[in-house]
Amino acid sequence: MTGAERRQQLLNVARALFAEKGFDGTSIEEIAHRANVSKPVVYEHFGGKEGIYAVVVDRETQVLLDRMVSTLHGGHPRAMLEQAASALLGYVQDSHDGFRILVRDSPVASSTGTFSTLLNDIAGQVEHILGQQFAARGYDEKLAPLYAQALVGMVALTGQWWLDARKPKRDEVAAHLVNLAWNGLSHLEHKPKLRLN
Image (cartoon, rainbow, N blue to C red; front, side, top):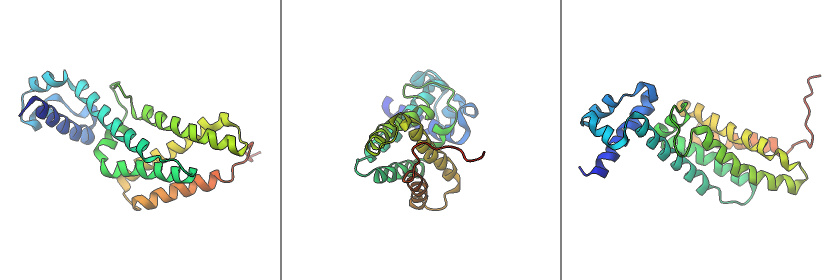
């Protein structure tokens, strides 16, 4: 095996173990054993468990971010909401091991960041879109960050639930998310207040 092939093999093995057992439940010994190499080979390539974990998280983060960004083609805001929900649920479906790794609390800071950092990046893009829509409709643009966080959080938390539930089908889950978000957003009050008092 070339050095690059060995490195990829170790990443594949580590990714599966981190998804199955989490960071704390995975050891260098187990990674080496499953890859049929000695522990020093893992240390040589990654410097330790933190190093290999950071690379796995960085790669998964980039895959998800690329998928989200490439899916948002513009157009009508509802279409963009549908694209975003479908893209995140598609990632959950196609890369469930990667999603399991990302949604766990990351003990290691990676160059791209944790799942919450990634969600903040996505929310930043949604915020820009909402800000334009709010301005066009006479709403306070300063509230766009709040609504962006709420929308992205709703989709991400539903993705975590759906990771295990797997029912209903992906497109149906996305349709329900869009239904809740869009029909709620289409009737926004300019100055909402709680009506509990």
